[in-house]
Length: 302
Image 1 (cartoon, rainbow, N blue to C red):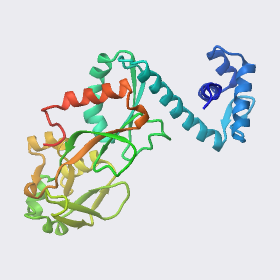
Image 2: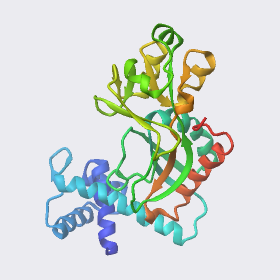
Image 3: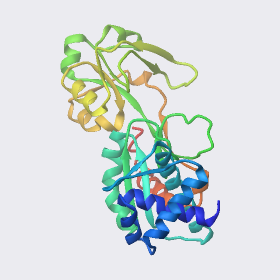
Image 4: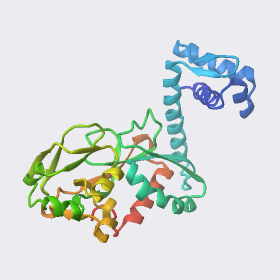
């Protein structure tokens, strides 16, 4: 890709972010004429209209939105390459991280103050979503993901392990009794966490190939682990949640851990990023920070 195309992409992104060509020109060491020519050249190069110019603001076409998202990722990768080739050791710029919602809120966000103080030239965007993000399309530098990672071209590094447990309130157990084996669960009120309503399958046993799988119809479906744990604490039924989420409730006796000898093997927590960012100082700094903070404490796998 020619350098003038990269420059034109940077101008295009600035125009979209500022809302007008004149605002982009004022924020760049450039003139309105040059900005207009660069965007026109992009439209000519790709053979499509990218922007709809109105009297008040700019609007992206569908093709323009795709280019905007991809161009941000391309320019970010170029920046990473420049830093790697220059041997930059000081993490700087903006780091965009995605993480599961509850993990990000309870385990990642409380550490960010220390991380930002340790890296004063770095800024962080933390995106909390309970889905697998597209690193390229959403311009994410680093994603934290729980579970087995399918074969892909992404670079992965294992950070920790997450232990899923089953728990219920003493009040519920007094009413309904305590399950002695996974096969007892269909007779109990089970609480299901999922992105979409419906039945779930819970796996039991430390051996990933062995063990058992139980179909759970679920009396309550929730797409929030916070809400699921609250419902279990208030006697709604048996929940399957990460151990670290309910550590305090277990210690206080508000929840009781069930079927401990049948629990599944811990699921790995990985950091994922694109191979082009392999030499990124800011990604390396964030991963090393998490590894150091979690070393020996096992906050996720108890």
